[in-house]
Image (cartoon, rainbow, N blue to C red; front, side, top):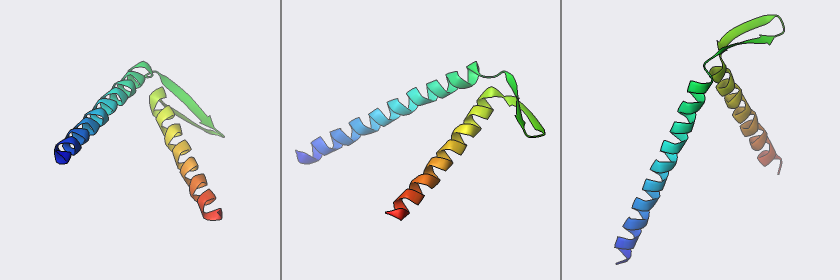
Length: 78
């Protein structure tokens, strides 16, 4: 009986992860479709034109990397 409950709980968890993944995919797809216009990004004397969604995703990745590096640094200090 315990094995059956464990299998049911595992199936439910997998289903919830699948649903969450599909919802996040739909949000990401909507974000990309709504942010296709070209923008210019200026840094010092350099200018780059790209779709807005690419620029935002690049900034997200940079932010995640900074957060990860700051988190690792904070853990090592303790």
